[in-house]
Image 1 (tube, rainbow, N blue to C red):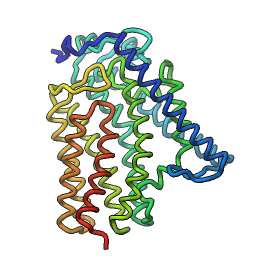
Image 2: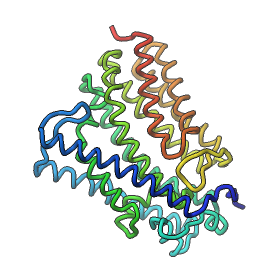
Image 3: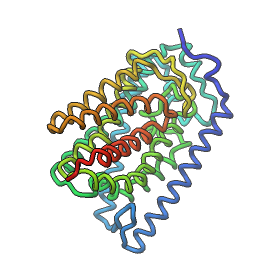
Image 4: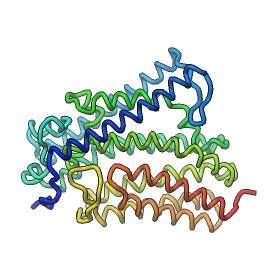
Length: 354
């Protein structure tokens, strides 16, 4: 029995217009980012947001290998995993799988038609495994590497150091995502397929592109905030602050979707980029529990004073509230921004730095 109702259906034409709007917004943003990159290359000077880059052969090889491994090969692996799940676990036909991995913007794609023939719960689980398998593994591995780097070599630019070094990567990856936005085929499926939820319907790729674009935009917001963080915290605390900003939202966001797909009943209607915009109390509680354990364990492991436990609890609650109520596709951006601002306010008000 399906939970999809007529109110979820806003019409193919309206959804396509929304998808086009997201595309053109991302196009303008990446165009501006490209212009900034060109200025950095031409002048050889650091900008307030990014260090200057020398685009030599070594840099081009590094970028090419990174794109090949993290976007193409890793994407193909999870494309294969999700294909297998949709086939064996959900029961999709070959044609249904083809449509699921297409752009979905050249013909109507009605989620209600799929959940009428297949278990909505199983579709959500397949979506969750493809999406979180693709990104959560990379995100946690990258976070742990950077956390160790900050812990071993704290510096005033701890919050933004890694952001300032990958302008070229962000620009090129942005253009590739834009190039394949409307396209079908296995290469487009490698970039979009694993994380494009069946339940998001026509707006699945719009949701992915919005998340990618807002993550790049967060770099600009974090630069001035990061400078303030370095003023109010001691270098020995930089790694903990870094983990509270980045690690807590990765854990909360990931476990919210895992818990919601496995156990939640999607009854809470929210606004956002997707054909079906609903979340669950079960998913929210799973995210809250995971975020709370992560934040508190982090503070205890570093043997920080009691006020830090209050900070850990506030951030865990903030992440869950924002993940639940922010428009779908924007929660990563708002969680990370709120975490950075909460940490800054904590350091400024409590005055921990000697």
